[in-house]
Picture 1 (cartoon, one colour):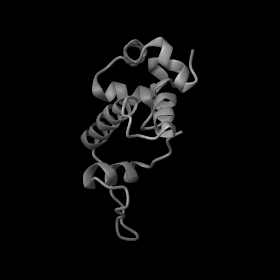
Picture 2 (cartoon, one colour; picture 1 turned 135 degrees about the vertical axis):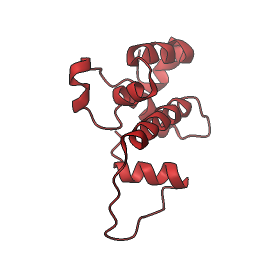
Picture 3 (tube, one colour; picture 1 turned 30 degrees about the vertical axis):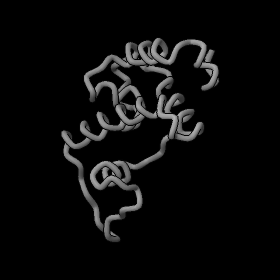
Picture 4 (cartoon, rainbow, N blue to C red; picture 1 turned 180 degrees about the vertical axis):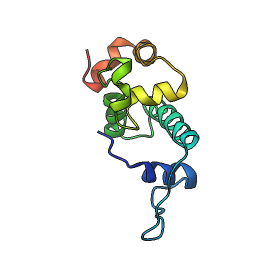
Length: 118
C-alpha cells in the first residue's frame, strides 16, 4: 500500500523527483487547493501506471490494489487517508465507483487476472 506523506508527495510533484528533501526542521503547510492538486495528479498518475509497460509489475499491481480499495459511504470518506483512491477521485471530481468500472472495462476482464482479480 501507499504510505507517502503529504510532504513526500508534494516534493515529488513539485520537483519531479523523489530524492529532493527539504532542509532539516523545515515544515510546510499545504493549502487546500494544493492538496486537491496533489490528489488530482496522484489519481492520474496511478491510472497511467496500470497500462505503462515501462513500470514494473509490482508498481502496476500496487496501482491496481490502490484503485480497487473498498469504497466507504460518502459521510465516512473524510476519515480516509489523504491519498486514498476515493478521496483522490473526489478531488478530481469523479465518482469512484464509475472510475473503478471504467478501468475494469478498459483493462478488460481477462487482463484482471494479471492483477489477481477475477
